[in-house]
Length: 398
Image (cartoon, rainbow, N blue to C red; front, side):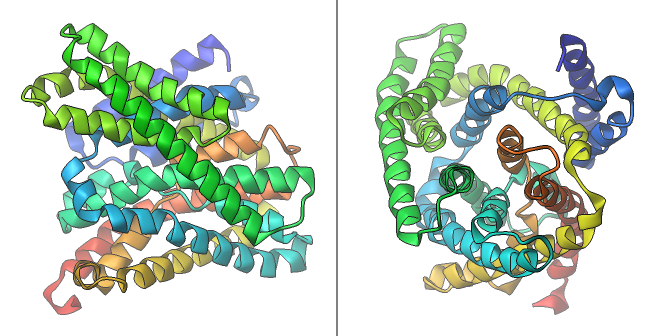
């Protein structure tokens, strides 16, 4: 991606986001992806690529930190256990069940191995509320659903990357699948990342009180976001979960302060520019790059994987909601349907896909199937969620 490409993509993204600020109803991610698809047919853009390091080490820590430090600590206290279960047991169960379903059909048509199917499933486990938040707000659904969706996404961004990393290493090294190895690695890498993020975020967040100038307050947040990520990766644990945890610690420190509004205003002045900048690039590049990898002869498999991913997510949410009476009350069948369809595969799935493309050949069917399923999720679920939420709000739908 040349500097000229970069400026063009940013200009397009800023235009769409500016229009969205006025109307609050534009499905910006879809518009950016469609723009990328259109640009892919223009020779000047058709060969655009983006490096794994830029995605993983450059963009990812910022996106994770933004979602973590913005999240309400009170909502985390109220639903933290639910978030944790959805993002660990629920996510592992989703990956395994979806992997089995993909393998059962992929083996017949493509001789897809179980590890390969599990790799596709791991790409489809993270959810992205950015794509549907404005739609949910406009439909006036229960605000608790939005909080649950945001909290789940914030944590499973980290746990899904852990699963993806373990499974992709198994696949590229030719290892056979071992559930025990997967769980052991998952626990070690996840717990280690959380501990690093907790200590790093707790220690550095205290500095916010000594740095009265807004510029320095923003600088310390950048160090927390990227420092926790790189430190954890250096040690060999999850940098993603380290950044999420450090962002939560930073948010907690801000909420304890008497000057919380002042501190948050300083942070938003910077991070509110960074977020649409990164998302503009990621979604447009997805549209361009997906056309380089999607093989349309696999469309039936795209659709199958997408439908099964919806079913598996519904079952996982429904099962976990049964554990506590309070969750059963809040997550009735309406809430389960809304959270299922609102769980769009978005920016994190794209990051994982753009990471995987560096490991596999351009014509590899895993890339084709994964890109196709993610595109269907982004487009169809974003379109479906608004009318679905309105239907489920009707008095006779209970």
